[in-house]
Length: 556
Image (cartoon, rainbow, N blue to C red; front, side):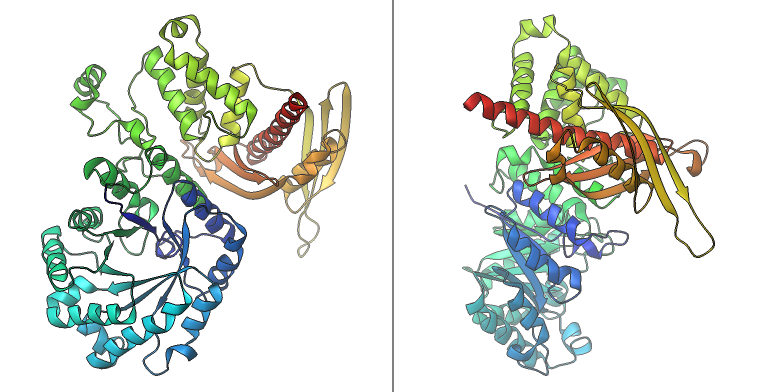
């Protein structure tokens, strides 16, 4: 089966989208997630373009990304200086990225009016740039910018730019539909002309979505034999966005019957889509194909009745193939199956390093696979009902895997009460006009038979509350010293009485030396929502450490 390489540029091209911004920590987390689903190439950014992108290439070396390879992006060298003294190239080499992608001009309009050089000099620049970089990298890709517009303007010159790239040692010629306005019929015609001229050259496709053709043009190129496809998660990108990998990847696997990622990783497409939305603090597009919450929703009575009899009646694929769920009133059996798939999508399956997770997942698996047991227990239906009830209140669990696991463990009778809140108070005192507010939190908690009363300051009321809670618990649970809060996000949920009276959702990302986990809280009060997420975060740390200790004791 032919393999199509997936090249993700969410961390570079995706960040050029309006209102889409990622911190260094965000970029690292997304890169890790992309590697977990088997993305072949992860473009980290343009080294030297800004400190964040430069730091990314330094920091990412500390992470094991499996078979995924980090790519650095840049342009051909400046027309008035050689490659060895071009700052862009110096930054590319400093990045130590194993893969480098550089773009060059294909369109005579850009050569003359943007680059302001001659057509012949542009060809020299392309060849010299690639030839200089070739010995320093493991793989070298050439993005032929505006190739389709360039071909329409001057077909022979556009083809000569590809010839120049091959002469410089490009491992793949990526044809870029940069303006995003080409129809698929024209894209097919031009790719066939390229293949006739360069029958042995590996080709890739990089499409934009200004005419809503990004996915169609990408799949058409793959059908014609392209071996690499570039795009972004959820189609984020400049103007109307890039080709959406969340639609392209299922299209490759399920429509074209070609290989790109494993079936197991395909089932995580919904997870990765919602993960990136949450990291960017952007409301997910519920109507997005394949991964949107409404992608398999059947509101009409005729549709719902038909789908219950045979899902093929109104579904082009089975939603579980991409980790999504059918959204119709469900029976006990289908509801339990759905929650089992949700657990799988979040990593609750045999083979998980957490013994407690294995036990819970195995119990779920047994209940969903044994018909007579389904009639004897309502454990899975209880989990499903709780998840649906909480989501109706504004909770979301795509980024809050820690909270979801705690909920499932508690329902399965595996929860543990590590501490209990008696009371807390947070005071934010401001003195004078120039002094910053001084927040102080006091709280009372019960740990076993012990009642603890503590107080702490912080850089904000939530930080003060977290510091007070740690201060209260650290003597009982010393390993909490390993725990760090990596990220804190607040989203105002739509309300009927105005934004100041609406609910807020707090998402917290935590980590220790071994794991990362997310937790969620929802309330009309931001402190209360934060408290919920903080408690879940600490409880999950304590729970997994307790289970690890029990497992180690058994092995002894």
